[in-house]
Image (tube, rainbow, N blue to C red; front, side):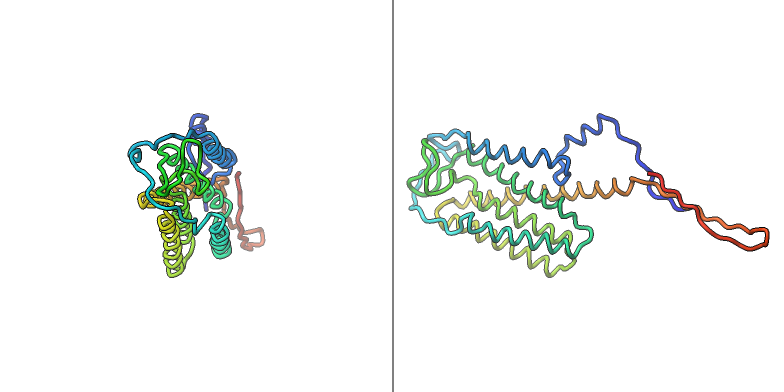
Length: 268
């Protein structure tokens, strides 16, 4: 006899409600709600923040002391490379790995991007640290030279978030260690280059890009872990949707001939 895992009894309403309330990026039922909610939070924060005359401690005694430099790596210049790299990673893993959940990880990666932006925007509008250059943000609103405030760097947080999630995908689903380590080295080198350009352009202090890189890395790693946990739960639940019973049998007929067979039952 061959038995699969038995069907789990249905959970009670209390357990189901707790499961729904837990954050599981990659779970489509939750993503339908949480992804638009995260986007709305970003929009509301950016539209309705209150500019302060002075930054909050510990940045309240800082004053700009550098001349403004043009942004060497604007977001519009980096976006095509980011989209191309993401397409190569997701497409390559889909083609080479039968166990890769493309839609789940696409939504998970989007969660990492949105949550990184929420953290970045929260820090910027909470501390409102001034940029290092003159003609900076004042109480009337954002400067025309650059985007809002200095702490912490959005370029840095998003670059390291991208490097972390994409590298985690490679190490989890690619079997080539040479390719994995080469990609991780390249992606983190690119993130470091992007972050250093913000200091070189006088748009950020060193502490801005260091904290931004750490925050982006931690958020992306945490989201990836939660997505993998969601995928594991999907695999477990799908394996327990049915019970299969196989019963072999043998008998002799009236002519003393032997007959063999099996009886299969599948219960959903």
